[in-house]
Length: 156
Image 1 (cartoon, rainbow, N blue to C red):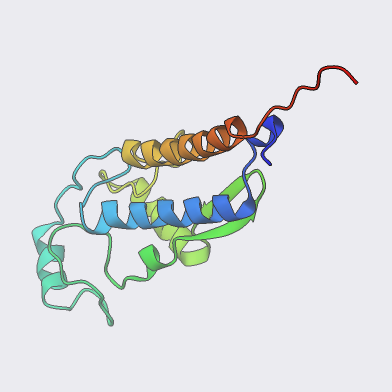
Image 2: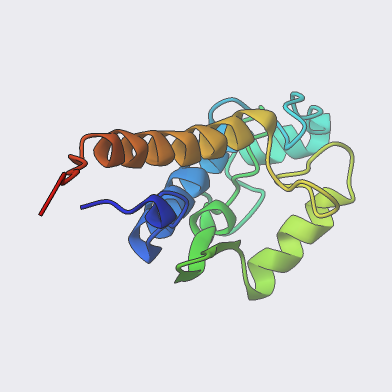
């Protein structure tokens, strides 16, 4: 039975699933749509770098030879995007160590912001996805709450 007070509450499992969905949405936006956190197309690589990348000469081990900016050279930075902590109040996602430094460095160059480090971190599409997940969860709980019969006794 759903209680009215339980409608806004979320479980750690809910937050984990949502956080992983957000991580995947960020990867898709960056690697497939080639867009930054402001939903703008990444500036082109320099001709020099695009040439190196296309010939697999930009790094010892390359995951991408794309000459269109996809923030994927070795593939490790986007693969390192993960959920770190989950509790009943929310989830923390992001990068640690070297890859956190790469994301921060990219944030300060051209328009290569994978996430915004000042203000709202996510692109509008990702924020809309988060809001929809919260609304859908509340709607589901409200429907369950409304289906609970109310019993009124009259007399003894």
